[in-house]
Image 1 (cartoon, rainbow, N blue to C red):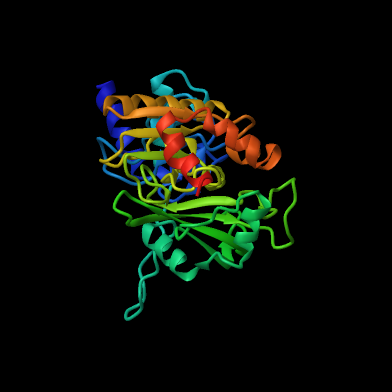
Image 2: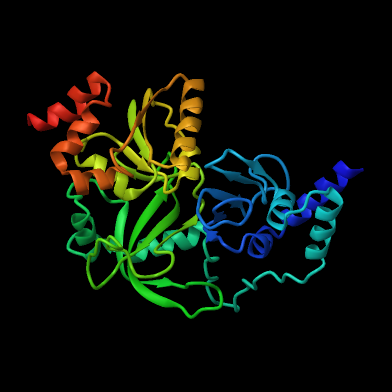
Length: 355
């Protein structure tokens, strides 16, 4: 009976997954189809993601969550238990029933007759519309932002655009602001756009304190269907590099300009990156933190199971962009060279240097 009660409550909570997250994981925020937060105990951060939409049960069910830093996973009953500090199932169930008895109205997405329906906030359609309204980055603040971060290899960057007045809303109770933003297209293995990532930029210029990002609480946000997908640079073949941040991967592209690369946008999404069928060797670009270590371990295990060779690329400092900015191009290139398979040194590094 307890198992059936738990399953029923979990399904009912999953139908209101976003409302549950706003109530019990208030330190996080919605990013596309997921709620991002530090952990199941409502700490600030981005290593845990909760799926907000999906089937009622099974793979990809709404309300299922994973913490990329620890490997923990569960459903929304676990969220209630941990965030409220409860130990007995009876108490967890009582709290869940209390929550479910409250009114949680769904947003009214109906449109007036004869008008085009607005794209639901955070949906893949909204992401496509945003990207289509942005412009190429050449000659914009976005290009300047990259150059200030030491990144000059911007070839093949059609997945990146610039929007001079991109909407930003700190929270649901605050007025909407506009800031210039770098807009990145998130695509699946068939290059179909499934989402977008926004990095709001400081119109007053670059500073070491903010590294060019706007002076707002969350200068990076994603929208759409992200899990397994990525921002792509080049067309993947038998070799590919995968990492978290756009700046991280473009830094690596500064010394390996012909190697195909993907930016998964977070450690959680890096761990879930989908592999092209042609892939035989994967370079895993990890950030120097527990979430990065966990994502690396998960990818190594998944790659091994498919017969794909997985090689980590580790930074000297916190991430590869720090290495490039603070150590310089020559030291950065040398640090990457010794981590590559010999055949890839010849193929992706020496061939470029000798050209």
